[in-house]
Image (cartoon, rainbow, N blue to C red; front, side, top):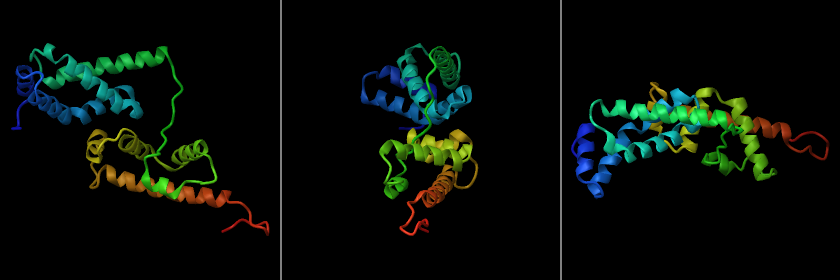
Length: 204
């Protein structure tokens, strides 16, 4: 598809509703602003764990209401208005119906799964161990990057844009650092908790 302005994409969508070409227009708008909307959600709610999910809900709502876009303002202004209202509604809903927040469980980290974190523990205990290692080992930015990439399945370049990472490797550097820290933390935990040998001393 040739590079079209947002408003041109919307007009093309309206004239071809129900066709594959119309679907392509929506996909292009989603690709352009997915990371930006997730970033807005993060700023408004302060909840990195819900930002990507909220962004999905907002795009669904925006596309359902696309026929109401009049072009009196930029598409991004209209989209931000929907984002703000949706996020504020979500915050009000959580305040009215509080739920116990759950910490992230990084089952998706392939290297850690291959290492079979504490094979002596049951699945639930293994997940609790991961949460403990994450709390003790990672800084806030590493936690955010891991959550967005592994839990919400955001591409690393989108994570870099969303979090404003300007270092050379972007989000990838935080992934590498976090996984290294988790492996070291797990090794220390394993060393502390290994069963004693027959002689009564702990295995080295």
